[in-house]
Image (cartoon, rainbow over all chains, first blue to last red; front, side, top):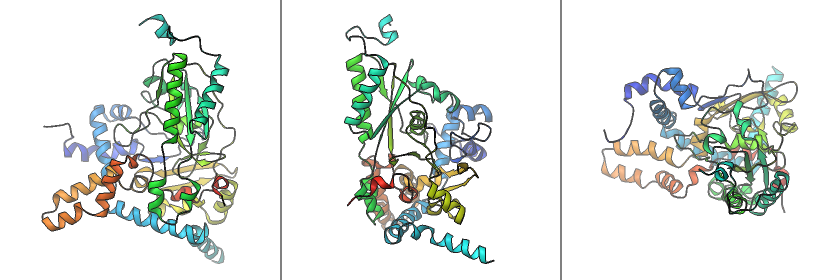
Length: 111
Length: 301
């Protein structure tokens, strides 16, 4: 082995748990929220203790998991998303972004 | 280690000014060196918000203060460009990093106390050793927003932050008394269409990053942020995209097709971002583009 990496089976077994405990999806981080409502992420060391793994393995699983969370097509779509949003705002201002939600809200009121 | 070094006072330096005076000098210096705002945080403010290993005194033993500098990224002109590619390359000029180095050097050379830039770049995946978001909040420079948890300054909105840990005693600033987010205009928009402008720009339920709710009191009641989706946009081209593209390129059997992939605009931008260190900052501004906080500062002739 030329450098450290995790066995694919270990990765597959633990990646969902590791990512769920990490900062990948951040829910209720604002500092003003009551402590029982905030849900900050754990460090690699804390995740390792929780899952019974060693810290280096957790870090490796997290790093690979972050890279694989979205495939390459998502990066390609991202460039198109930004181009579309940026042009819409330049042409119509905020209404270029919110118009469809305004229409939905109006339709919902009619219903 | 000598007693002088343990206490942080080097023999070659005269006694430092009183904490109040030193704080004033350092804040003025930070602003002169390129910062738009400067505040001082208590290193122990991290205790209830960051795990062991991620607090200032874990990195600099004996840390007594955290100097935090915020600087504007894109200029008002760059914000107005209709081409999203422009703001990707005009978005950031490291002004806050330069200012914090001036501050750290000043503390060490003039006062003889330890100082170092707080390590804010990731050292394992997306994880930085020190959160600049917490630093900005604890220095009283802003509060967390519904837009990707970005810390909004009440005057400027989005700022880029750097910090310095130091053993020099300084006067800590209080946290802001009022939350900057949500802006009253965003509360009205939320009441009307069920989402704030930032959530409309990048909605989690339609392939974006953001969701959340505002309570009856007009404050953030819940917040959701998909950082990994955000990474595909804000770090669109860089290490992430290159590693993902590399997997595809080395698996491609056809030489001509592989050459097209290797020499593509996508891979070129990915390598360019790594070469220019651009993937460490930001390449997506869509949630901030629609944020009303700080917009007045971006209105020019």
